[in-house]
Image 1 (cartoon, rainbow, N blue to C red):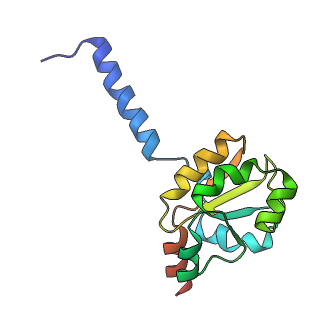
Image 2: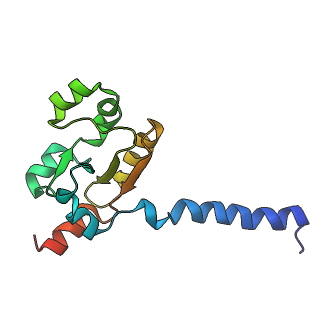
Image 3: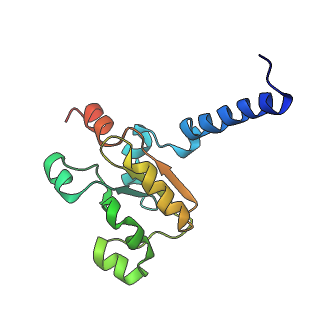
Length: 139
């Protein structure tokens, strides 16, 4: 059975759209080496979106700031003074580089959406997150 011209065009377009959702540009992903170098770049924010209890059980990546995913939207809406009071660091500017991490690289996708929806333009994810970090660090 032959597909109409319109149907033949729409199938590849739909497939391409699905692939774009799965395969993200590498420039939007941080590597282990980049995350390890964050302490040398105080202008970069490494935000761990795991729950506080998870961090107590496993530890955290050096220089990371913990803002659990359920708090992230509200936290990024705080004024600068409230943000610093709550999280101990200046609030990121809209053009600050933000790297999100979690346990396995799944929650970072939601964190990325939240930050971008609030106008943060330099958002990247650490897909390997804690599991890769712990493995490479021998923890």
